Every structure is written in C-alpha cells, then in structure tokens.
Image (tube, rainbow over all chains, first blue to last red; front, top):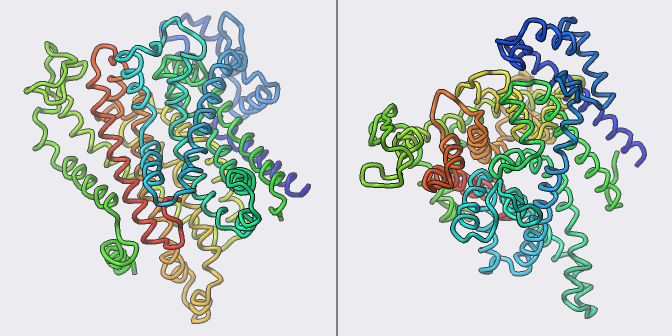
Length: 309
Length: 288
C-alpha cells in the first residue's frame, strides 16, 4: 500500500510538471507582442517597457521558464504588473469561492437525483420505471448545459417568474438553484446509469441473497448490504467527473452571468491577458489532478480487496 | 481485412440477438437526415448564406423565416442548415484524426512496451490532466481568429490520448493470444502482425468509443462556439446559441432551435453508440 501511495504520488508530480511546462510553452507561442495585447497598441513606450521588465519578457525563454516555476512554487502564479499590484493568485482567490459554491451545489443536486433514481431503476430492471430513468439519463447526457441553462431561465425566470433573472440583485440560495441544476444534470445522468448497473451487479451476489434469506427487512438489505458495496464505482465517477464540473462551470457562469474562475478565464481571453489565462488553466488542472489522486487513494482505502502492485 | 468486418457488423445490426433497437434505428435515420442537409445545404437553404435584412432583426418564426431571424437579420433556418456542415465536419474530422493517431500510437506502445510505452503513457497522462475542453481553450487562445481547421486541430490535440490508452490495453491482452504467437512463429514481419492481426481484433471498443466521440466533438465545438472561441469563418449551431443566450430576454426562438439541433444530433449518435455496443460487446450489460 505504501509503495502504491508513493508511486501514485510521483506519477502526479510528473503530470504536474508536464502540465506546467505545456501551459508555459503553448502560451509563449501566442503570436504578437504580449505587452501590446495587454496594454493596447497605443500605450506609451515607457509603460510598455515597464511591463516588459516586470514580466521579465526581455530575458531568454528558458530563464522565463525558470521564473515561471518560481511563481508556481511561491503560489503567486505571477505578478499581474498592473497599477493595483496584485498577483494572479489573488485574482483567482477572489473568484474561487463562487465557482466552488456552484460546483458543490451542482454535485449535491446530482447526488440527490442520480443515486436514488439509479437504485429504483436497478430494483425493477426493464420495468417502466427503469425505461423512464434510462431515457431521462440519456437525455441528461445529451442536453448541452449551454442550452439547458437558457431554457431553464426562459421557463422559470421569464415565463413562471419563480426564480430570479441572472444579474438581478437577489442573492443567496435561490440564485444558485438554476445554475446548479444546469451544471449538475449531466453528472446526475451519469450517476444514475452507474448506480443502476453497479446495483444490478451487487443485487445478484450471494451475500445479498443470504441477507434476504435470513429475513432482514428489504430496506436494510438494499441500503446497507447492497448499496454500500455498489457505491465504489460511483465514488470513482464522482471524483473523475469533478473536472468536468469545473470546465462546465466556465459555461454555466457565462450563461448566468455569475462571477467565478470561468468568468475570470473568459475575461482574460477577451483582454488577451495571457497571465490570467495561464493562471486559470493551471488552477483548474491542478484541482483536477488532486481530486483524481484523492479519488484513487480513497478507493484503495475503502475497498481492502483492492491490491496495488 | 477491414471491409468484411464492416459487412459482418452490418449483418449483426440488422439481425441476430443484439440487433439494433428502435432507438438506434431512429438515431441512424436522424443522422442520415443531418448528413443529407449538410451535403445539400446550398440547395435546401431558403436564403443565401450571406443574406441579411437589417430591418428584420431578431424576429420570431414567420412565413418568410420559418425559424425567425438572428441579430443581423439573417434567416436562422439557413444558418442552421449550414451549421450542420460545421457539426458534421468537426465530428468526423476530430474523431478520424484522434482515432488514427490513437490506434497507431496505442498499438505500438502496447505491443513493444518498454521505454516507448513509458514515455507515451506519461504524455497521455499529461494531456488527460486537462479536463474537457480546457486544453482546446488554451490552444485556441493562441490563434487570434480561430478557423474551422484550428478548432478541429485544438480538439484533436487533446482527444487522441483516450484512444491510445484504449488500444494499448487491448493490444497488451491480445499480444499473448495463440494466433499472434503463431503469426510470430511463422516469421511474419512485425508490422503485419501488429496491423494485420492484432489491431483489427482490438477495434470493437474503438468503434464504440469513436461513435460517442463524434457526439463529444460536436458538443465540444458547440461549447467553444458558445464561449466565443469557435470557428469564426463559418456559422455553427453553438455560435447561434450564444446569440440566443444573449437575447433570450427579447426572444426565445434563437436559443431554442439551434439547441434542439445539437441535442437531437448528439442524442441520435448516443442511441447508435448504445446499439453498436450491444452488437459488438455482448458481455456488456445493456445501458451500463
């Protein structure tokens, strides 16, 4: 187990090294002068030179790459070198809570809908309940979130007027409902399918039959004996899909005009500020790598049958 | 080697215990319709692609404009018919590129193992550490005005890794099979063993993944277009939806119709993919 942990950890370090290197060199391939695209062509030569000095752009590429690692290790992800004197990390920290709130709410919605429906479908395979949930699940996977969002807005905000418009003053939980549903639908559909197939497999196992035969209440057999064992692959899906939630948040934040890391990234692209783009991309992939690692370790931890070698 | 396999595949989809369900047929018919519309777009579209009537912006559906007009007064139906071309081109090109690169690299990696395998798998690890369209967004940022080619390229850069992993796993298992050992004992050249015997037998899961991959590529292109990062030289469904989302307070039609087109196309591909999985992989639980 310790060897597995160590190997998995080092593999993640290699991946982080690769991601940082790839992001650095891809963004240095942007044509044109990065200083001009940040400040605009009309900017004064003095300002341009000041920014160039601040960003170390006159140094050779490999030296810049070294400075970049320094920024990554120090956790600042680089100075923005504007008049406010903030770092990329500080801009990110301002935006992370909104994105996390959205992602967690979407996750909550997906769990709340996906797992119970998956269980019900598995208990009555090939019945009308099962067929209905199968169609819902396939629909949920096929509906693009950038379409579901506007449709929910048209229905609930404009026509029924039960939930607030995006950008309106109403804050709090009601403003989070539609974005969370929009972001969580695809995940809930995947969880539904996964829970169903995993439960179906477990329900035929001997220990479930034994539990039933010794007269345990049906609910207890399903929830305690079967569900606990069926949840392992579902947990993996939840972990692996967290990255999809983060990229999905870029779209959902745009649909609902919410602040967040996605909005920061899109604003950075719009302003052609490669520092912001670089910071957001690194942040999202780092979170993804860490969550994947955590899922792997958790999986080994909760299921002692799994042997890593 | 490949053609008789496809003929057998076709026979399996139309007869036998796992033949295509109603939904899979529905998907095939719908996709055929989309392909027809995409190919004959100039003859089917009610207006020229360049037609704009600035006096009739953002109008709802009417006799002149069945699906209404967009922010420039262009006919939405016309734009959507031409948008089918973008969806089809992106879906097919991205999957063809990714599957070809993935099959070759994955097969080589799995068959030879060693240092090649180690390096290649670390590269796929790195590419797969970017969730979803994030790497594509990063690559498109380099191009100031992304073209259709640039979008296809950006989506392919991140897409081949999954196929390589899949084929590698298959090849690892297959290279120990008796018929592969027999081919080696007969003294066949490695290239022939690998691409004549091993790879064709590893293709079933690749075909399934490629089918779902077409849907994924279409969705990814639409998402990029929705974010304003799609092809600037052609009209795509995602770009129309982007307009629709900006104007949904004024009019709903512009958000509804392109989204329906995307959804039904993706749904149809998924139906066909599920059907193919049942045919090609009888062990898999249906709808797993």
